[in-house]
Image 1: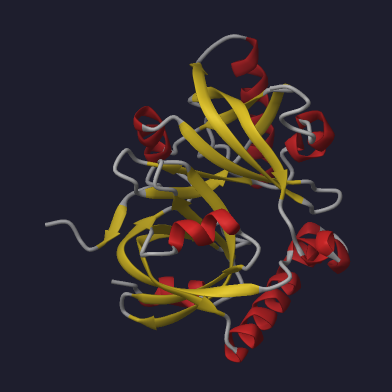
Image 2 (image 1 turned 90 degrees about the vertical axis):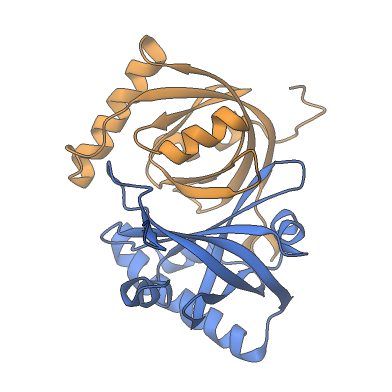
Length: 142
Length: 155
């Protein structure tokens, strides 16, 4: 994506990818039924791509197989500003450096929240960022 | 359809996620800012007024998913159905919105060990009201059973 197409860059909101505040993901089935849930981890892969943790959100995975678009909301833990990302699914990784890095992050989150027996990374899903925008609130509009 | 424990959580300060979908299949996510349980399958959901995609998706009876999560326990349910009505917030809605935000701050400030002014930055300038017909309810608590349907009960 060129700078002309998107003034806000993923690197501008790097704090959102520290994994401190859970993100949100919406997907939709082929027949137009939405699904929305929390997401443990969103990492920035480069300035055009993010990688999302896939632990057990089976409905999300089924939806993406039918309709490879997603909408993710992330929060900057320092400012509590929120950002919306429109994503296009690219690929899934189940081994390799991207997967291992995300697995370490998930293990850390699980240890912090006492969810060691629940949180287990199944795959690292790579998405291209189509749109990135800040969500307007009373504070940002103030 | 909406079990008492689900209704109780919906009407408490909690995390509320709203998922919708555009006619071209593009999903959208936003937050909810208070829910009033109107009946066994009816909700009044407050949504940020400045959420143009969500509001466009809901107009004309769009499909909607609403996920509620307890901030402390992570117990979650997802309710799916469709929008029946989208209208300006009433005075009662605005009072309910203020009470919901105050309740959430009362939980999140100590939980996040963060200043109220900071968390308050997430609060929208205003809300609109969406009446939702609930057709299905799912257990969404993190874990291997997440996504299991709890209502209507499968035969």
